Length: 211
Image (tube, rainbow, N blue to C red; front, side, top):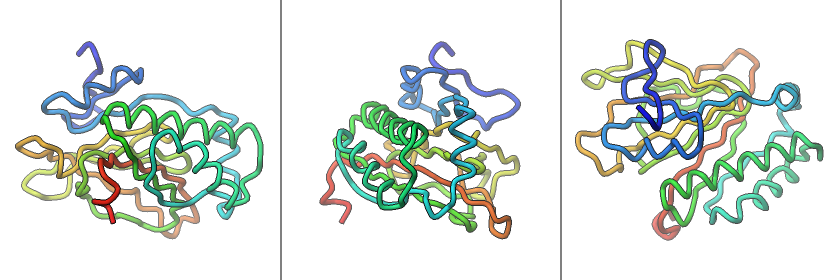
């Protein structure tokens, strides 16, 4: 593939890898189940976010226009008393950049943004979300798990998205038939003492429909 490479040997069929944001348009092509934007987190930022007191991690859920994401994330960070430092600015800038990329790709006038600090086995069952499309990026802790379902059963092979790498997932409302057989879930961490920080972005056309 010229736009993105399908993973061979270490990823499910229909999941492609993009090395640049402009390669993400592979996600819109027929038969694509998901695309992962391959990237490595900055070591200094990763050390900082991993060591930060979980009570200082920003959390919230809001529907907004992409251009207002930076100010909204700043407010969430302020509410959580996240330390004002270069790493915090990096987090705000990265969430804002991913929001712009996702909104442009999906031609979505609004986004549903959710930041969540996860300590339990949230969404522990493999599933497909009842949305058109979703971006998930794990900034702290293990990334999203995924695999191909056969006859509605749990995937026989399970793969994990790298920390800091966003995955673009199709939902049940994506206009393609047959629907994708790619399932995903949050990795089970309950009892480990670990805290994940997860960003979730959903494409929203009309906020009134989301009430």
